[in-house]
Image 1 (cartoon, helix red, strand yellow):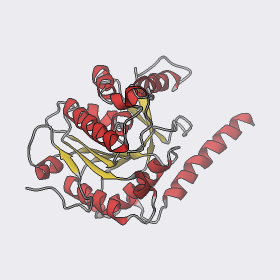
Image 2 (cartoon, rainbow, N blue to C red):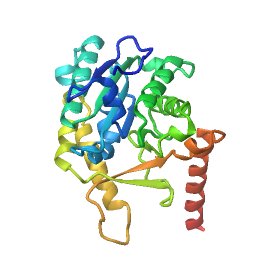
Image 3 (tube, rainbow, N blue to C red):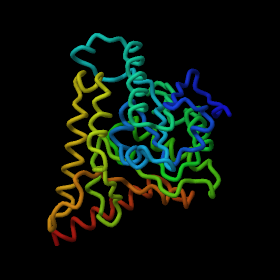
Image 4 (cartoon, rainbow, N blue to C red):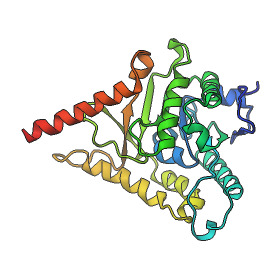
Length: 282
């Protein structure tokens, strides 16, 4: 059984346990849609840990861009975009093997394509993979992220998810934090994702991406530190209930109501934050 037909010119499929792509997609229960190599390991570790060495759960990952625009320093300072793309592709494959993913598919689109609101092929590819996987839980970038490519991909991910029939859409869609924390969400509206199940795996996954860690961006320290900080600062009146956690924005309402726009949903969250802050001041 082959995988879905895609518009991307050279999609890189990698299945760590070497079964065909089709069955690897079909068994996937948790799926991440991320812009860049290492985004998955930062924003969707909850899904990785939930599925790690579980017979009935499998984590799959889609990485949409080619990694050419990565900042670089140190040993990677003089790498060309072509060299960087290859390094990042290999790193992402290593992470998939380490985390025992069901599969990782790297579509290889330039970031500019994803930021283009009219770029239809990327949406079609996401919809095709989603249709082949039928996951129960999907992790995407959150709609209040700071990174323009992340925002653009979040919108494309929602558009692709909405192409699925209503009865085949995932029950849970989480908008995950990378470039902007989500601790500002009202407590009754943010999703708490505990990520203290396998601290060693979490650190090893981030350490795979040496083109970033040794190349000028200490995501390994920052991501783990933020998870620990969230656990401590989540509640001022009780002891820590988790050793590490991440926050997510609940995007599931967009799966249940196609008339609800992403902008309207985010406005609800922002309005609630605004109201809660002003109420306390009052």
